[in-house]
Length: 601
Image (cartoon, rainbow, N blue to C red):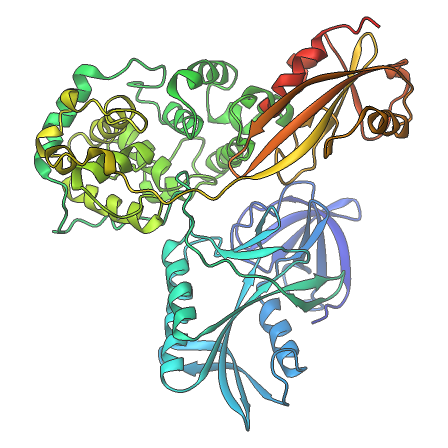
C-alpha cells in the first residue's frame, strides 16, 4: 500500500489518543494519529515520524501521523494499513497459488472479518491483526487487553467447524523481526485462544513488512512461538476479581493464623508500614529476583535521590541507570520511569487507587498491581509471586507445574475466595513473608514454625519435599567473551551498549565474542587507533544472566595518551570519577576494579 504527499517531522507530545504535536518546518503542527492505542514505547519525544498530507481542506488537522522511527527502525503505526496491505498481498498471490477474489469486511456469525476469499478451490475467512509492539526483535500482540480479538479468534474456530478455511494473519508493521509470540503478560486469554485455534486447524500466520517513506508491503514469514512462558518472574492476565462463590483447595481458616503470625513476626523493612504506594512500588520492582537484604541499601539510595513520582519522571537517564546499577534487569527501571511519566500526565502525579488503573501502567503486571493495591490502598486483590506459589502449592499439595501461567492464574482466583476484606495487604504480605523465611525454597522448610502447618496437606502427608512441582529450566547458552581494560595512567576506555537488547544503553568495558589470544587483542587495540605499550592477562570470570552465561577472559592493556585519541565508539573515563558517573553492569564486576588502579608499567 502507498501513501501520498509524505513529509518527515519530529514528534513532540500526544495530548490525547487522537492527536499529536510535531515539529514540521520549524513550527509546531497538530496532527491526527492513525492509531488510538497508547503506543508509548513508540512515540517518544524527539523521535522522527512520517506524516501524510490529507488533501482535505475541511479537516481540522492537515496531516496524519502514519509511521515512527524507533532505534533506527521505521515502524508503520497506521491501524488501517494492515488490512489494506493484506488485501493487496492476498489478491496479488501472496497467500494462495490460484487466482482469488478478495472481499473486504465480510460478516459471519457474530463477527465481521477483515477479508473473505473465494476461488473454485476454496472459501476462506481471514482476520488481520496489525502488530506494532516489539522488544529485542520479538513482536508481540496485543499491546492492550482485547476481548474483541479473543472473540474474532473464537469465531474463526467456528468457521473451521462449518467447513471454511480460517486464517489469522498477523501483519508485523516493521522489518527485521526474529519471532512472534502472544503477549501473555498483557492478555493471557488471547494467548490461550490462539493456541486453541491452532489446535482446531486455524492457520496462524505472521509476516513482517518492508516500510518505506511512502509505502508498506508484506514481505517474509516470521516464526511463531505460541508456547506458554514458564519464567517465574512473568505476570499474567488480570484475575477474575468479581465476588463469587468458588471452589478452592485453600482452607479459609488459614487467614487469621497467618495474619496474626505476620503481625508478630514481620521483618522491619524500610518500605514496610509506610502507607506509601510509591515506596511499595519501588520495593516490589527491586525485589523481583533479588534478596531482601541486598535490596535495602539500593532502596534507601534510590528514595533519597528520587523521593517521589515527579522526581522519578524527571530523572535524567544516566542518573537513573547509575542509581539502579547492581540490581540488573535495567528495562525494569526504564519502565518505572515511563510509568511515572504516565502517572504525572494522567493521574496528577499520584499512583491511582484502582487495581485496574495500576495494572495499566507500563511495566506493572498482576503481582505488582496486587501488591500496591492491597498494601497501599487496602483493595482486596491477590499478589502472587514465587513465594506465594510455593506456599500455596504445598498447602494444597498441588501436582501442577507452578511455572505455568495457568497455575498462577488459578492461584490468584483461589486466593480471591479467601481474601480478607479488612486486611488484604497484611494477608498478602503474610504469604510472601512465610515463603521467604519459613516455607523456604532451598533446604528444609521450617514446618514447626509455620502457622499454616495445621492445614498443610504436604506437611500432614509427609510430602513437603515433593512440592512445588517445577519443570526443569532450559539450559543457558554459554558464550565466550574477551574483556579489555584499556588504560593509560589516568583514563580507562569504556563504551555505551546499543539502545536495545541485553544491557541496553549501559556502559561497558570493550569486549569481543570468543576467547582471544594476546596477539589478537593487540591487533584489535591497534584497530581502534590506539598504541599498545604493555599487555597482561587478567583472571577468568563468569556472569550468569537469565538466559545466557558469559565465560570471560580479560586483558589489561597500557596504551599511550588515551585522552588524545578520542573515537566515536569509545569514551575515556577518568578513573577517579568513573564509578560515580557511569552505570556499568555487574557482569563486569571482576574487571571494574582495575579501572580504579593506575597502571604501573
